[in-house]
Image (cartoon, rainbow, N blue to C red; front, top):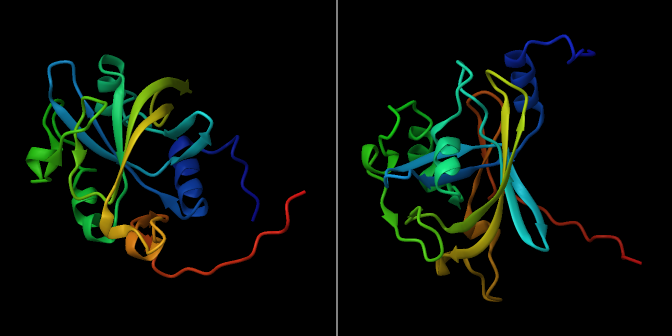
Length: 204
């Protein structure tokens, strides 16, 4: 099969991309509006960028009517956010936050998700998240226009909260204890509990 992406409708291209580019880590992003209303939303176009300076990115795409999501609207007003990682135990709560709520209604409150104060930024973090990255907005690169157009959000990592329960004997994160979920195509997910190791080639 050969797909001509230049001829596909955005929705069709999106479905093929999300089915093929897997597994995708999930950024459960908390933001806050200028008047102090919180928002919590999941995004599976997410990854680290560089450690110098420590930076990550996630990508909210526009709504079907072409309007930006609340996350982007909040970032335009308050350029700070928290990326909370999602373990299997929080999968259902994360999924609930994908529901469309009226602008300004808090997912923390609507779905009973406990929050905790951040240290360096105004948006709260998810209290039960095993890892939470407090970030200052670096920039938003806007790609395309209208429905499914992207807002590539780059954030400078300021603080990272790591739960002691996910640390191994060496003081580092133990991926088995972390038990994160990843996004596959459609409504499918995977877990990071089944892993294998490969020795990397020597670096010259």
